[in-house]
Image (cartoon, rainbow, N blue to C red):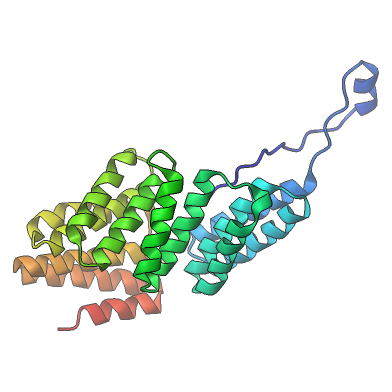
Length: 283
């Protein structure tokens, strides 16, 4: 979620008359509305990282209005992508889709292949969450065509494709797609996407009946999510580790990971997450 705009910091304007008298060209006027849009976007990113999706959406929407008022096309693209992600996270899937549809239908913006790929991938992920597997696959195929294998979103697109394969009960295809994503993600960076790849690899191994082989990638995903400080993902990782230990027949370890998942979920203050963990732990 990053803006591709040029930012000119505020410069002191002292002694302009004397500077002009010395033959210097006048300073370029500061674009105050651009600065305002960037500040709003930064507030949105901070709110989103802190788990306040609705507040983030408000900031991104305000940034979008400012960028539209000055026809800052790069900003408009970034704002709509950011706003769609925040709206989706806050539960407003329809609003998120409207932002992405508006972006893709706005021909004057002349989207780059990467921007098209990101928008299509986001729509594909939303379709996947709604259980619309055919639409999800179509959109991800379109994202891959726009992105090829070199754009910055290539690994994320491969991971979404892997998740679709898991939902279609094709763990071998999921393993191949997530395995192809992992080398595209450098060590020490892209922690969230690396965790996604490792989690899918673990779940694919589990679905293939290879529970012991699933443990290592799931533990690696957990370590990355703990580093990022994401309670929902941490709880999910712990749940999957509980499932995996149960599949190996180690009920003691399974209960241990379920208890850890519930502790994390309850401490997070997310009632829906805590309820989901309790449901998963029912016999």
